[in-house]
Image 1 (spheres, helix red, strand yellow):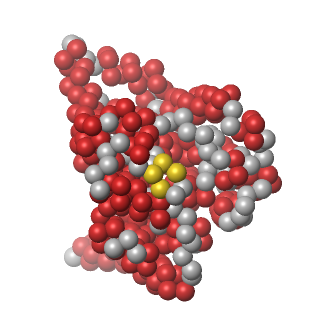
Image 2 (cartoon, helix red, strand yellow):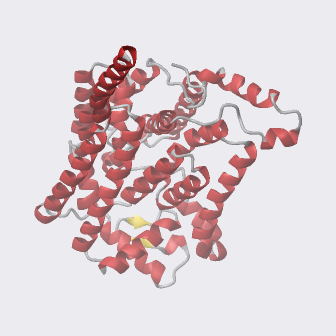
Image 3 (cartoon, one colour):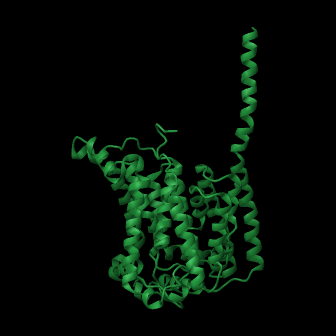
Length: 425
C-alpha cells in the first residue's frame, strides 16, 4: 500500500510539473491570436488615417477594363504604367476586385486589409507549427511599415500572389501535395515571382512522393495554367506566353533597392543577368547537395537510394521513397531558403518585392546561430533599407551585406533531420 501511494504521489508530482510545460507550449498560439487582433486594429487605423498612394491601381483597372471588354491580345492590354506583364490569374483576381469594389480605392483598401490579416494568419500558422522561433519573436511579423504599405496603401498584386503561396505552404506542411500544387500554380498565375520557390518545392516533392506522384502533381499545376490562360491561348497564344511569362524583363535602375550601387550600364547588361543566374543556380545546387539532402548522402546519394530499391522501371516510377514523411520544419526551411537564395541573386528588387520574403525573414534568422540581439539588429537593418526612398548606393550595399550575412548564417547552421518517421534526436 505504501509503495502504491508513493507511486501515485510521484505521478501526481510529475503531472504537476508537466502542466506548466504544456501551458508554455500554447503561448505561441495565444500570442499569435493577439497579434492578429492587434494588427487588424492597426490596419484599420492605417486605412482610415494614412493617405493612399497612387501607383499601379489605375493601370490594373485599365487592364481589367480591356479584358472585360473582350480584348484577348496581350500586346493590346495596357495601363498608364505600361503593358500587362502578368499571367491570366491576375486579370481574374482584379476583375473580381473591381466587381466587389466598383473600382474604388477605399473599399479595395478594406478588401486588401482583410487579405493582409488572412496572409498574416497563414504565416503565423506556419511559424507556430514549425516551432523555430520563441513565442515573443512572432511579433516581428507585424512590425514592417513597408509591408503594411504594400498591402493597404499600394494594393499590389504581390499581396495576392504571396497569400496564395503561403496557403499552398500550409497545405504542403500537412502533406496535401496535390492540392498544394494547385494553389501554388494559382499563385504563379497572379505573379511569376512565386517561381522562386519552385526548385525547393520540386526537391521536396521528389523526397516525399513517387516519381509518378510528382508527375501527376506537376500535371495538375500545368492544367491550372492552361485553363486560366485558355481565352488567350486559343486566340493569341504567342502574345500571351511572350508577355505573361517573360523571364528576360529588364527593370529600371532607379527603382532598384538591392543593386543601386551598380552603374546603370552594367545593371542593364546581359552579362550581369547571366552571372546572377549562374550564381543563383549554383547556390541552389550547393544547398541541395550539402544541406537539404545531407541526410540522404547528397544529390548523388539520394539518386542512388531511389534507384537501388527499384527492381524495374515501373517500380522506380511508382515506389515511394523511404522514409518519405517530411517534417514541417524541413518543408518550410527548404521553401524559405530556396526563395531567399533567389532574392539574394535577383538583379533588381523593387519596393513591393519586399513582400516576397519579409515573412520568411524571422524564420531564416532563427535558423542561424546568431545571438538574438544580432538577429534583431539584422531584421531592423533590412527593414531600414526597404524604407529609404529613393534607395542609395549605400542602402543597397547595406541590404546586400545583410542578405549575404543571413545566407552565410544559414549555411553554417546545423541541418535539421528532414523526416518525422524514425526521427533522430
